[in-house]
Length: 145
Length: 113
Image 1 (cartoon, chains in turn blue, yellow):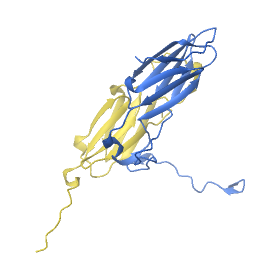
Image 2: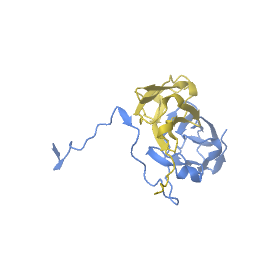
Image 3: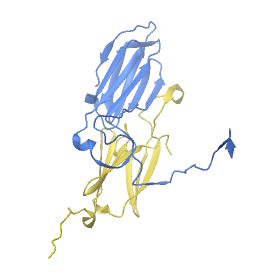
Image 4: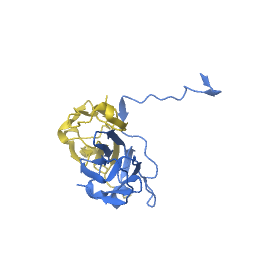
């Protein structure tokens, strides 16, 4: 079938129900001076008194995480140094990178940056951003419990 | 099938394979690991009861693990009796040791007599 003059449908691969054990690798695994950064998957919900965010940071714990507020942005940085042994493992299949994460969220005008709390368990970071009537922009660093 | 299929990293050493599955926010008891006819299946069935958030309050939803199952056909060289797993920092790590005969022996030089 042609769409805008291009043949489509011939190269579609249906993913197998059972995956191959050996598979594709993410790029750059072997380079010492380059590093992949992952943008963490995030769930955000708008509750009555606060915004609730959950970030998926598998492989990390709260000591690896830094959260800050800069102007109107909530910035989450998480990093764990990989040992030399970890960098040079014999990879057979890679689908995720778990040593470096970064994501910035624009705070809505009714978010109160004074009312931010964070906790982390089992690789999931939960951040609660309280709401206020009067928006204020301030730079702060938030502790993770 | 859940919303997201968790991702895995697999690496190999001289005597084992390691499967790391990224599934943050669950507990050890949520997982089932089964082995059947050389197929390794990792699954979880979770009720999102600890999450009091209502469905309609979600602004953004990029991950969620209501239930999932991923299966892998294993190489024949794995010793199925010795498979171990642990769950740390949101990563389910499965250790699959190789059978004795599959462990690579170091290269030997052969003398010519």
